[in-house]
Image (cartoon, rainbow, N blue to C red; front, top):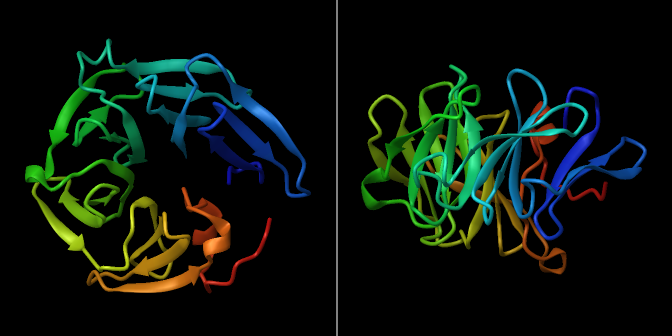
Length: 231
């Protein structure tokens, strides 16, 4: 959800960011250009949004009117962008991007487009999907390939497996939960919470809903009950 009260949803199947109003009216907000297979969308600190397109290997700024500006791509980054997936801003304004194809995390300056290496998590990253950053200096990575959650320190780049609960199946996205810990969505049609000690609790599971790709930010205004409500 954005400050204007609307829900903005990336649709990787058709390369569109949809705007959904509180009354349920759906209209295309941004499409085409550098947007072909958008896997993540996040609010930009300076306004608008930043999106990552995994197949075009681009990181793009989208302003409040839906106009796109390329921040970086595989060419401009010298090959450091390799299938960008999860994106998250640190408290200092640095943008971190997970390379789904390259199994690395890079830093992107959203003003200059400069891309610099950050961490390969000492080999613990495997097809990284969503990422989240807390205020204690931890970057969490959802490993779609190895089906676990890895924690990387922002100050050192040192990584460790944070949660490898056998329930985790191809995690797609994760966000900080307001009650502490993380909320994680997975291919097994489930939403789970992982607490500060890495312990997992299933909040909701419904196979009829298919794979869950992402977690909406509005859920973090209050603790999640696990009750499914259609929007």
